[in-house]
Image 1 (cartoon, rainbow, N blue to C red):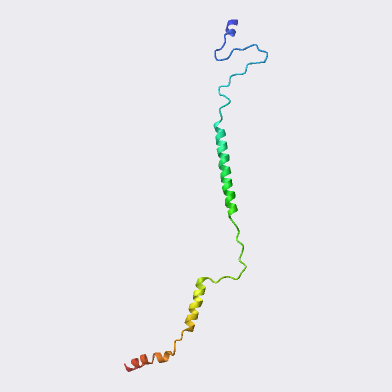
Image 2 (tube, rainbow, N blue to C red; image 1 turned 60 degrees about the vertical axis):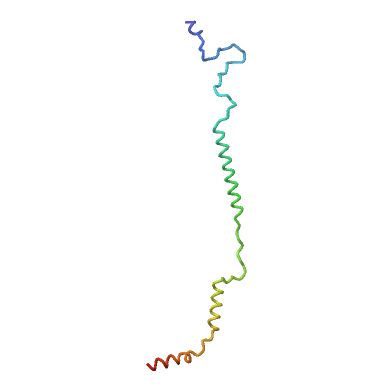
Length: 110
């Protein structure tokens, strides 16, 4: 039975009797390979920074306009209406009774 306990498993490195302590198991993945999750983390951070910078720039571009304290301006249509009404009032229509006397005579002759 001692022979069975003495057989070494080929997948396990041999035990050494060094004073430093037990042998560390071999790591199947080398420590120098970066994790793929680390790339996603930096991509997400970069996207957040870019979006934040764009929002900050956009908000700073918005300005509040000062209210106008002067007299209100009359718009173009109101000015045109005033000019037309002044022209109409200034038009001399003459005496309408004299204008239509001939028409009245023609009608009376019928």
